[in-house]
Length: 371
Ligand code: NAD
Ligand code: GLY
Image (cartoon, rainbow, N blue to C red; front, side):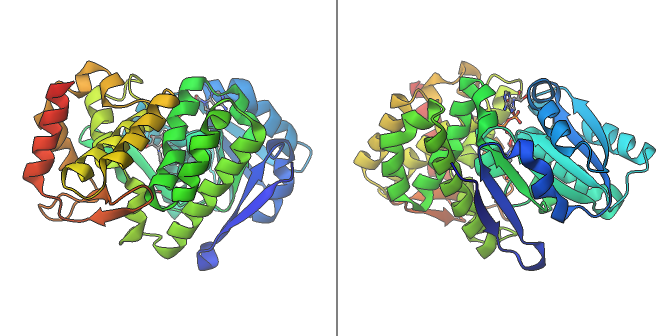
């Protein structure tokens, strides 16, 4: 299978995404044109380091590079001020320079933390994404959103900082636990539901192959999603409008994740799957989309064993007022308004900047109390 190249067109901040098998073991050939200095630091977590770091190190060795690694524990809780400070301290102590390259080798947690670190280290150093989860390959490694979490909520501190290169090696997904693969699939499905009804049809036929790790199906899904994301990011890099569509299901989802406490009991992608169904259900309650559309989404989640509100831990349904209050702190909101991504059908999502708060609150109460 050949390696596909997709360009994210952002003027002088444009960059390529290379997708396919064996990309990691050829990393130097992709990286070389994007190096400024000859020093590289790979930031990764313990799990990924034990599985894939050696392949990357072997690919970079013997090329005259000075290579360092920072290995942190896995998990969402690492997207914190404390970890950011520790990593920055390590890089500054080592006199890492702006011309040096910080490589994120990992999932969205590593990518978001590394990207934010790169953006503020000496006002911005060279930065490359090597995503190792399905979620990171189809979403978080592309588009330049970086962030850490705070006690006030998820991803509330961060910035836009584009990588110079994204290397998505679909082979590395073979070691991903099924639960993580399914969580990432939530973000895959998102693109079909936003504006690609044909892709949703394709997923109904081939989603099981993606989750079974079929190399062709995985590469096709990653490629379609990256192309979709590149198109939206090109149109609206800083999320003044259309890019907010990529947040379908996330206002509900971030709240579900937040109430669960970022302890691994609810993964980001699981919350997104459940949140997208909620967005469709709520849209139906307003008469925006049909019951058949909602049932199609629900049936797809059930067929593939993806999460919905009913299957998530009880804690996310225990306090509907807290869930609603969490949604009111979402980054998309302006003034006192609640912004939501709603849908008029499969592949017909749109941004509603002023959702009716009373009916959203009533919907949240109804679904939490019914389940
Ligand atoms: P993650 O980064 O926590 O990775 C999931 C788990 O899989 C970790 O335990 C990790 O060690 C392990 N892992 C990673 N790659 C592996 C591999 N190849 N084999 C075996 N194990 C592997 O989770 P995620 O789902 O990748 O990312 C979620 C994060 O991404 C959230 O913080 C979310 O907010 C963020 N996100 C950001 C954006 C963005 O645009 N920046 C978009 C979507 C999500
Ligand atoms: N994951 C949402 C975005 O990149 O905009």
